[in-house]
Each structure stands twice: as structure tokens, then as C-alpha cells.
Amino acid sequence: MRYCSECKKEKKESYCDFCKKDTSNHFVMECLAGNYKVRMPVLSMKHKRPGIKDFLKKVYAGFQSSTNTIKHPDGVNISRVIDREHNQYDETITDYKTGEIIRDIHEPLDQHIPSKQKRKNI
Image (cartoon, rainbow, N blue to C red; front, side):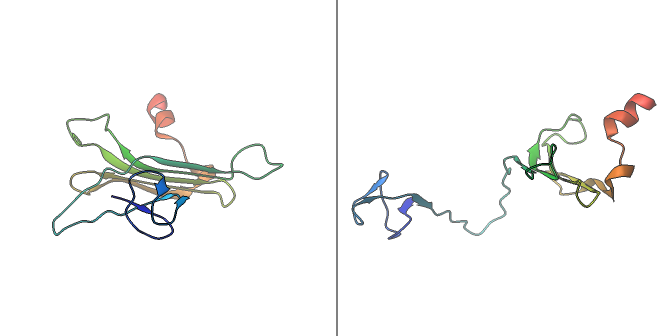
């Protein structure tokens, strides 16, 4: 349902009949008793600073379909943080259906070797 962000009354369009203004929307979602799983959309952010050419911190989180559909047919949830300022690489990959941790990496960024590079060298 869509509500007015100021008076919190239900509205049908962007114009609120109670406030007599063109206000932004306020959405309300109710979850009743039960076990719900939500496929989180991908959230990707980069932290940059003026005068520095590349990013300082990069965050990636969300659902992704798995390349290995036999082991993970419902996909995986990925949470990855690359922090160049503090020299840290954190990545956690969990199975969407079971919640089992598939990969959990926490290491200094300068020692991190991407998995694509590891496969090429084998």
C-alpha cells in the first residue's frame, strides 16, 4: 500500500488529498506469521574521494544465480567488501535455500588472489 510521507494517510497518486500537496510515497509492508525468504536485489556501491583516481571501498551484496546449478539450484547470496584504504578483502557466499556458508574469506587485500586467477594458474 502507498501512503503519504507527511500525514501517513493512504493515497492513490502522487498528490495527497489530505495534505493537499504533491508528497513523496511511504510504503508499508506487513509480514504475517510464517517463514519467508526474500531474494535481495543486488546492492553495489563505490566510495570515492576527490583527488584519488580509483575507489577507496567497494561493496557488493545480493542474490546471484549460481554457475553450479547442480550444487546450488536456487542460487547464492553474496556479500563482498573490498576496502583499499584499510587493505582488507571480505567475502561471504551462502547457499540461498539452506543458508550454508560456501565460501568465507577475510584477508589482507594485498595477499588476495582472485579465484579466476587461481583457476588460470592450475
